Length: 441
Ligand code: SF4
Ligand code: SF4
View 1 (cartoon, protein in one colour):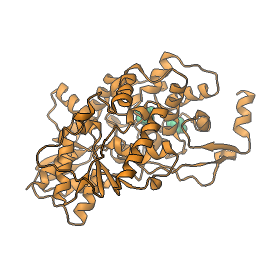
View 2 (cartoon, rainbow, N blue to C red; view 1 turned 135 degrees about the vertical axis):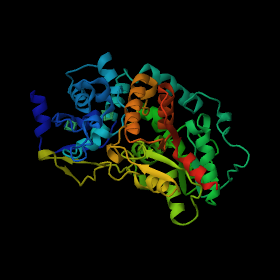
View 3 (cartoon, rainbow, N blue to C red; view 1 turned 180 degrees about the vertical axis):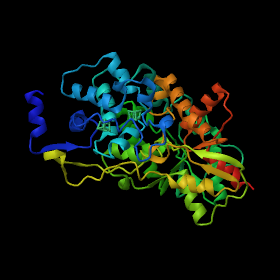
View 4 (tube, rainbow, N blue to C red; view 1 turned 90 degrees about the vertical axis):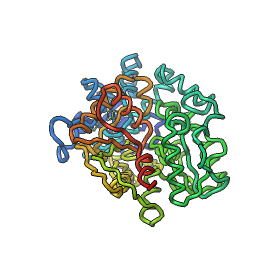
């Protein structure tokens, strides 16, 4: 250990912040990783057997320690200390990761290291250092910045999902943020969502000129561009006067609820409006009697927890303070450990549908295994995304589910493509479609 390191580690108090724009904020976390691999294996208290014992898609796919969170943190630590330069392999390892948060949950069972924030900060550093993001991300980033959507499609086509019978209000307390995928590709999700609003007697409005949420920009480390989008979108939302933003996309939900506040250095509570995923909205409507699930759906079904709706969805609160001896921090830091994600609402909804036999996969809730599509993975590493979907589908088949339900268009598409390629006998649906089918009765 160099003298430089000793001074940093044992200074009685040092200033730190949960700020991903500076990797130095996470040197403690990277240096204190004990390589226990709790970030790779499912906790032994939940261990569902040898077949499904990993939680990290990257370590499972690449079978080499550098790809686990502990490997990425060791690379990051060496870079932060100036003893390792970027090279093609290091860059690939940092981006061959779904930023799914499973490692963060695993590590916080024991050490409370900020693994997810460290991985995000490493991508920000890659972009700042002029080596990131990956080539495949640049085209998407260009689409988002210039055309305001992921696909590079025309803005005038954004509302092409609105068909006869769907009539958004000019003004309403509820604003539906549709997102790029449900606007341009998975129109069945936006159309089902609009029908659910109608069935529950809820008027909803749209943003006058909806733009992409910026998930890919944020996820690949392009923070300047992501922040500009966060400022624009939050301002536009506030101008509408709507009290609640509802989205049917898990990635969009995480952006609005967690990462916009992170980018704007405010708390989720200070956004000035409530952010709900469709499943939270529907759960409330069922409980207050406004929505009834009548039509039976006879199937053996399992639910996949999308990372951004589950362990990554806890509200954000900015924090800065001091770290002292033994890593103790002051003032008190309320850790985000993934246990307070949106887990019960989708399950309650599905259980309320007559005929549904809901069964859990071995890895569930905060221990769920990522589908492999999100946070720039599918664009830069399509084979890795397919691998992860197939690994999860093995679990679906293991429990004998006929129908796989998720609450994110990214998960739905990745699973659907894998099922089609394999010829698997599994029906993949978004939860909005299932709810919509059950309320039509
Ligand atoms: S669980 Fe935490 S301490 Fe253990 S190897 Fe993973 S990152 Fe390091
Ligand atoms: S974020 Fe997910 S894929 Fe990336 S290192 Fe952590 S567990 Fe592995």
